[in-house]
Image (cartoon, rainbow, N blue to C red):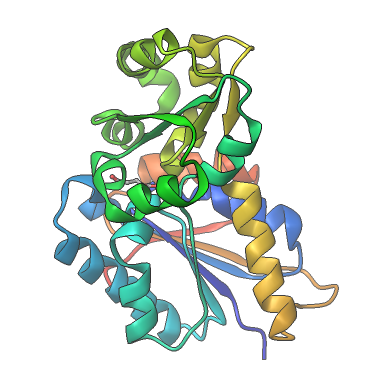
Length: 264
Ligand code: DGL
């Protein structure tokens, strides 16, 4: 019996992770859930974020998933340990790639942009203490960016998104960072705009590939990787599906995709 991989995020951000998983593991079925009714997670309390993500993990277990990817930095730092203690299913989370950024920087100064929740979390502080104790890490929360990405077609909101990003990134550039870690999966959707503002000299890192590799490792260890077959993809969201659906179709470049609004 084929078991899908469940992938959750507060909205469309985790699609960037889903895409990497599909590229690396082309024979796997996926069920994606964008919880856009409750987006952004980043300004909720730790209890709210934990409860929202727990209900989605429960939903994926009910759908017979073999693994769940928490494709949201905010949900991961808020509650991956909590979710692991509550559920038996293998869970893969996503956190800012502080270790890779620390290894890559030549100026000993790198930036991390993420939600306010992620930046202020103990999880993020611990990552820096463990992997970048001798580096200058400039943490920058970017409130409003996730909302703008979810609100409308990115192209239509581009000027507003670029303006806000410029405001957040200017202080980082003044600090002479040479590496920038995207600590929110939504930001990978506007990576081109970010690179346009930073210029080509700054190395931008997201977590997509690392997460996909970790999913592959876990499934390989559990002997659960599928062999050659045609995969099926389902995309769900909890609020209006119009903009979400457009993003799914743009990223997955297919019209033969199931997109539905449900409330688990
Ligand atoms: N994509 C989520 C993350 O990686 C967005 C957070 C939010 O909904 O505020 O943190």
